[in-house]
Length: 168
Image (cartoon, rainbow, N blue to C red; front, side):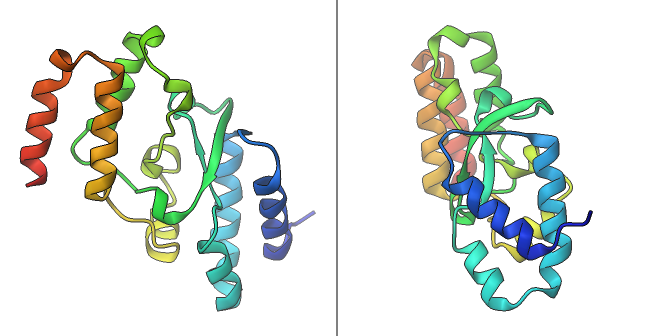
């Protein structure tokens, strides 16, 4: 049985209205967004605009960002996520979280770097949905705040100053 784009969007609407955090398999969500990506070309611009103006992108929490197992997460809008972090701050944050699991709230930090979660869907998320290629300055500031909240300031001070230099 084949699912139409309209049916897929109805399912997505139902999921978004369900309890938060939402639990799904990253592999299944990748297939789901691939289906939407394929079907959206034949959809009306009204449907596309409704989709991209809402919170429709499933983003898992950092603790299960790269897993094919079930992952808890939330639905975010294209303006709340980005494709990749070229500075590596997000990767550093994940490493610190893995090294010191008791000192952070990693279960509540979202993996907003879609390139990590859905690596084959760059064109769909960036060119069709309007997801930014890199985090905005305010997103970087938030990333750095999160990084400093999960490690001692002395552990991240050199990382923060080097990242600020890159941003300027």
